[in-house]
Length: 300
Image (cartoon, rainbow, N blue to C red; front, top):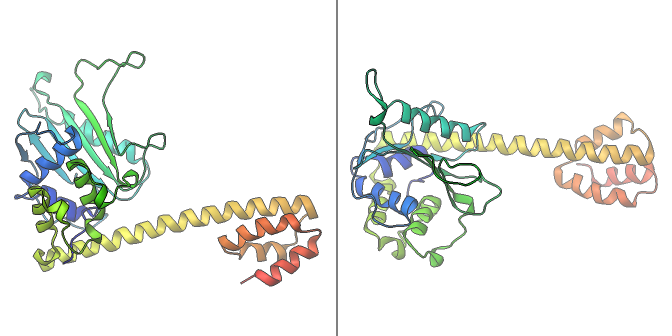
């Protein structure tokens, strides 16, 4: 048995935003927002699941939107790539959802609260090790709430969730584990299947149930994400390599004088691992000849 990866936009929306996902989404939101308490008794999925196009993967649409019984709007987004100004995009989408509730002639009392839930497959807040972070408007010094505290930003940072299957303690743990690991599982863990809504989520996530069109869309999104992540990793590696070269060349110039162009070119061709080794070895170099000998022995 193979499952679609909930971290892919298409899969996330199919599992949590389809016409048969109401109970699944209610259980998930209660787990993330209210530590599993049944605070949300009913909800309406505003944007029923439709197979999305692939162009750019993310544009201005949100993965899932729901309206709670009291009128509160909940927008849920799954984000794999840490793109530029992403935190601003989250705030913009929440503010836009709040503002667009009113049409011409309508008054402010009709505005309802907006909760933006973001599941991020990367770390956003380095100063905290909490998996879930919840932001609201508060007075800066005394931390009391703004009277109309109607925009709430909730973040789930998947890399900070370290628990294994045997360590799961509650339904919040189980839902986060579901999102983080389902794409790698080949069967439904008994511990997870004990929750009816999670069992149903696994049934929707079963690849066997996909149409050919859905499978093609999913595959295209998976390839897109892999390509984008590869570009990010390559850029990070190239930036790291350039920084190491700059530091090593500066150290060598100080010790032995300005390096000639041939020596500099040979250093530029070294891999990151080789640069690390050179950074350690140069501490023992007595003269430029030692560097030349090292490059001859270690160059590709």
